[in-house]
Length: 102
Image 1: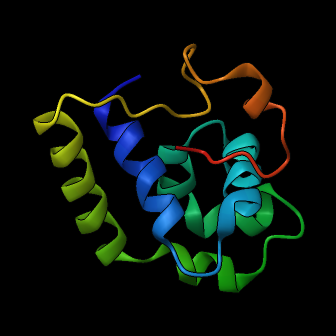
Image 2: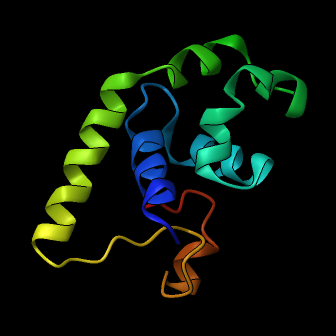
Image 3: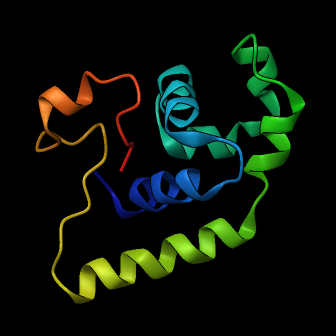
């Protein structure tokens, strides 16, 4: 998985009002965290039930700044940052409805 997808996954967790379950559903509906952000204005059409408040919450530059800081920390300290799409992500955890996306 590329660094952009990881940063987008982290940023998604930092957007106010989205939560783990909402983030997981958005990723499932669009295919990736990067797609959630790049297609945020289309989300209500793509995914019925997504309200304009979600679109507004996804417009959060501060989340990206913080996500980039988190990735710098991960790389500096030689840590692993796993997302739902990574093979190393725990399979049992992946099955939980409220599994963290990162």
